Image (tube, rainbow, N blue to C red):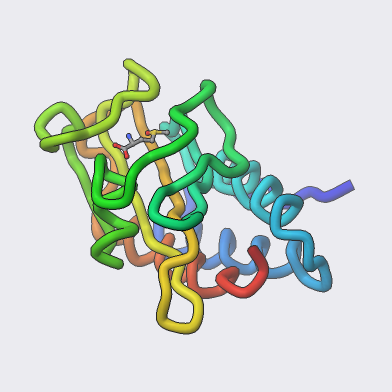
Length: 160
Ligand code: SME
């Protein structure tokens, strides 16, 4: 059994440090990308409060294809450059969206999503996937969340 449940009421920086440590430990020695992404999605859902979706889209050819996640069933294929995820993948830059309804081209997979954080995962200079977090609360994500997930993305880039 794995028990990586975080302490409650952790300061954000400490929460993300523990998440990164747990992610690294959980994927250590396992080279199956689907298994690792599945466990990482579960871990993010356990560590991060106020989420309704947490998971991965993988870059395959010129589109993003749904990967392991926790949440409601989601759009399967997203063209590069479209929506929040496609914008993150095409630009290689984290997208921090306080209000998804104000984001031009946002792709609504779950009507309850109100804010979103999408972080590219880069390996050998190429975006290979994105980590997507959705929240039912507006303004859920801030710079500390972006920095925390960026660290996680670089820690697990060669394990997915
Ligand atoms: N909202 C995303 C699509 C993926 S779902 O949120 C799971 C987007 O605009 O790219």
